[in-house]
Length: 540
Image (cartoon, rainbow, N blue to C red):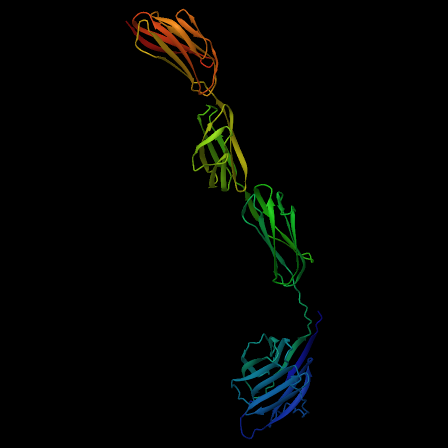
């Protein structure tokens, strides 16, 4: 920027007040004088007494330049000067002075200095008014006070004078002797030529936002906003976010890059993206914004806690049970995670060789599964479920329970139950006619029933009777042979579940009395014999 300083010195008229006898015979004449003093242009309006001081030589009248003027109106003296053209309409600065045309010795009076900027646009700098006070002028005060006062020279540093503005100085004092007072004044100022160049500073501010927490199965919304908070246009603005390990964009990228283009001052641009976490954990994110001029700004960091419910299921049940008996299993579900598990569903598989009997906690059979819909399960919360089945055949029963929830993987727990069968044998012995007479026959019926679930093999029946009975015959599921007082039947190879076998023995009464008959049963499944007796009364 190039500037020039112009220093202009303008001299203002000196005025002479007559401190003398104020008589009507005293008349004043005006003499104008233009001179140069110490590099400053000094203009004098001299008000001369008709009784001049013999010690002072009266100045000769000179032609007054248009740049200055002075006159007396109603006892008030006035002088002015316009600089630099001498014409108020075309000059820069007007300097005026107002004072009484006459005062008495010791009489207080005020004279005024006025400085006016005549221009419409020019600001005058460093305006300084200097006034040289006469020897016999006693200064009482000034408004404003002079910034410098030394050797009869007073200076007012008026500073800046705006276009068409003016400032005034009022000087108070008195004369202590009869003389012609000649306080002379001058004014200086600076002018500057300036070429304005606006200096701006672009400044970009970037802010990144994300939810404080998210579920592992969810996508995470990311927001980035960049604003030009500076005073100039920011060009080639680029916003970049490097994602932490384990976090990627929806298309698998490890960073986000946005082209914000050109940002005028105060303008804002926003961008959004979706991210996906590979695993639960804490992720810290931030963004940077840069411009083509190398301005770089970093956003405050944001932290996203990615969580997931962690379900644990445990199923317990009997290790062994007989076929057709009820089997009760217990299922415990625990949320071991730090966030609630929503939409929790438990399913228990019904094996092909089992039938649903009942379930607790509102579980119901749906096809080959028992289903519970538990809703939400808070962190560290658990629930206990029960299901009862019935096995229909011998073998190993595999029973598996699974649990799943939103944003949680499926977990399962299994139990194996050995389903066994058993042959439950019922042995019955009954006589047909009781009592019987000596010489009459009595038929004894032996019935063996397999009430169990397993085939009974090698079923052996032995019938024993007392001496007052005599063997006649035997028949039934197998052939019987008389061996003394015992009828031994050949083994029955197998007796299926829910079937029976019948044998009969016919005896004759030979002597009266109360007699007893007994049947004994053994088989491969029985660990000890089964016995049954029957009482028969024989009479004559």
